[in-house]
Image 1 (cartoon, rainbow, N blue to C red):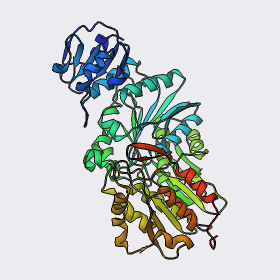
Image 2 (cartoon, one colour; image 1 turned 180 degrees about the vertical axis):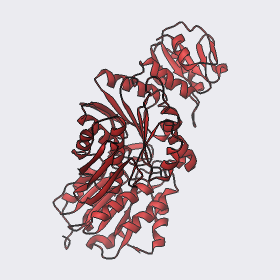
Image 3 (cartoon, helix red, strand yellow; image 1 turned 90 degrees about the vertical axis):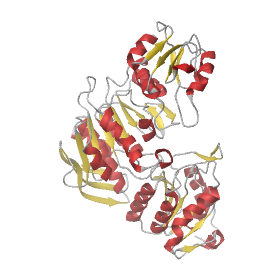
Image 4 (tube, one colour; image 1 turned 180 degrees about the horizontal axis):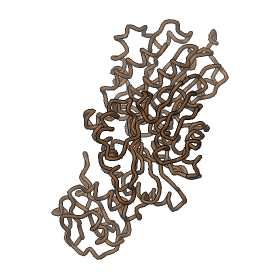
Length: 511
């Protein structure tokens, strides 16, 4: 594609150098530039892409998109724009042939529930005969291709390239998790969405967004800007959880028609006569397409909201009610989302990604609804992230658990012990018994908590004290198969650790 063609897409306020040249690739990382490439000089928190223009030129870049053309070396072609990230998104979509123009695209945003909802929407579309690709927190996948996801939503140059490849491989639709970072950084501005789903909004990522209003504003862009009708997707729709107060606000400002979902009688998509059990969820679905009974193997109230979100997306796409019902009734298994770890001890072991206060409370409420024995929770909080949620999560775990075992998560560059101290600050005011780890070798009777810095040892302790009928919840890491200590990733998978721990023999006197 020629630079002058891309210039028409990004509408620069100024240009320099020869524009009648072929562009062979796009990059915002100078280390990835190839001969004939176009480099986007992005300003970040810690770095400024303008500082790497010379490096990009030396690696073969023939042109650069900048916000400050005074930084461009002499003889290099340039396009000046006000927002290099927005320009990159639009240029990337055009360069890769606008892959989202001709297929249904569903974007899912919110704090919790995005990943499970992608699996449900994918299943519904499959029942309707639509083979969809999924881009999310766990992986980017289509058919037999499954790539671990380094980011929930890739940078726009990578996103549009991946979308082009998926469409060329036969993807007939795309279901995509859309993170607040991606919306704030305009990574998805080159995508054409048919349906946007808003799940909920609770405290998370405030280390980046600083406050809830900023966080909400980033999420809202999908509905107030990106869902505005255009010639390629004139029938866009917004599926919004109106049981969430932020969802109510969003429904009043959406640029697309709103298809509300929730449990109130005013929601266009809702569930009635719902029964929760250890076997899943059952009830009736009420939709604009009609009413039908349903059963799902997913557990708990928060998963009911994920089901309703997926149902609303199916309705918005105009899919048959039978396909929608069959999709949510299928064997939908989401890695690291209340994922069972089988054992022969009669203990229910569940691994979940819950890493915010709201997510942890939702999971523990679900566990409490189905528990017949005690609840043992192992959890921690990540380092270099929002510190304010640490005591909040501690209080929630202490309140809902019979035994809360506080441990490390991904401490990153923080001291794991210091993080644990902040978590314990939310538990101690509850007045629960504080156990030393050695006291628990023969089990526990009184409701309480303890701290074990090693996550492996914390999981082993949970396995040691658990009795038949108990539920052990390992929260915070879910599908992740690593632990970040310092700046190094070490292999660590809660599911593997739990399986190993429950295979070990119990101490004498236990069992």
